[in-house]
Image (cartoon, rainbow, N blue to C red):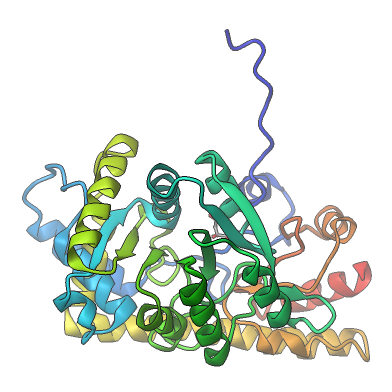
Length: 396
Ligand code: LMR
């Protein structure tokens, strides 16, 4: 029966990570997958995570199933991180949260909910967007439309084109927005632009959906949800898929959340009863360990303060690497201006390396970058910078 099955292509991001592992070159550099690495090029377990795990190991008494929506205290902690301690959403009971297996699990749950409950809605994604967005929405048999996002000349957001495209969306369509650190461009709307987008969604009856995977990596944990909070204050209904892979370094624990805000408590609860049914038939109930770690850290004042510092340190290291890249590449090739990298947020940089250049970087220099030309700045270190800049100058 399996004879006629054709091989699937390797995943553009995770497939490349597997290829990198098998490359025997000792000076190879992985700038593909969005995983934070420290100055020695290693992805350490955060100190706060280790401390929380020690406490959990001591206190854990059961491995019984979680409920379908996960750990209730986790949901509350997520809500506060996204919308602040004093949000009226809690009192009004307009907010519902499900713990999910990673941000991808949250997106897939959202996609199934949209397909099952919102019928013919189209999902608008930015051009470009995270490559897996298209895969997730296609897997749920949703129609995908693209809005312009990036101006390759100015290396900035093309806000006029973005608004023009979204003006053509139909009532009931979904607009997917990256909460911060847009993947792959690293370019985010400013607060005035967020407000204009929120007004547009509100006026045209579009349903905004945020993908928030990098909170804390642009300007800070509070600053990075400014856009999300503008939408929550402007639009009556909202969906959020969020992830703790990056800001807690819990990549392999799969910790995320799917949040729904409804017009009132009744509508939110009814809609979420459907989300619960969908989760039950996909993964039944979420895994406990990663979410227990996040809950422990966020609910313990000392651990939380220490964690905020760890997120700050990761953000500052990435920013320092951007600056070092700009000065090093300028030295390698006089007149080459990459100062736009300073305007980009988060792990990724995007400046239009083409497929041929990406292939040369891998084949000739052992530098791994995904096909779209997106570079993970989080993989840069002081010691690989010279080699990297020389190679980029050579291919461009
Ligand atoms: C990335 O974009 O590299 C990360 O979000 C990892 C992934 O799952 O693709």
